[in-house]
Length: 144
Image (cartoon, rainbow, N blue to C red; front, side):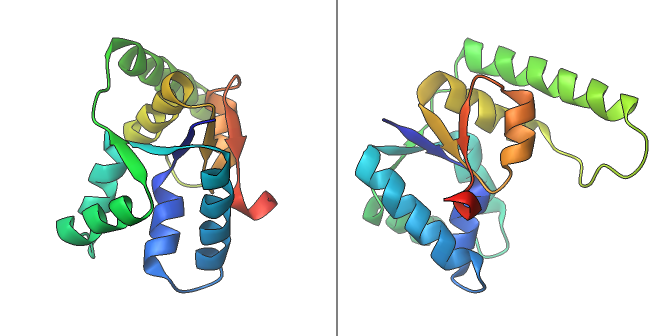
């Protein structure tokens, strides 16, 4: 069973501090025992865009953890991402009050990639992915 991994899980692990790092590490270890791990190209770009994003460090981490980068994001992924983002934006417009942080299109590309290329998505943002991609199996490391 292939598991797609969201950026926030890897950031928690690479940061190595706080309470989320050990949770992320254990969750990734558990997912590795169930099958291969993969990230969408958007996750790689988000890791690189972080203030501490270092190409050599990220590439070495991905090699050591056997996490593959899927650079191919073809038409079905882009269509699913655009449609899910459109629905998300419509839901936000209909709801009053503070809805928390806004999501960006990259989040929906990551979710659409998981729908098309993995059996499950590992993320700390399970709520948004479950709402946007109801058919996707989503796992939150905090819940494991």
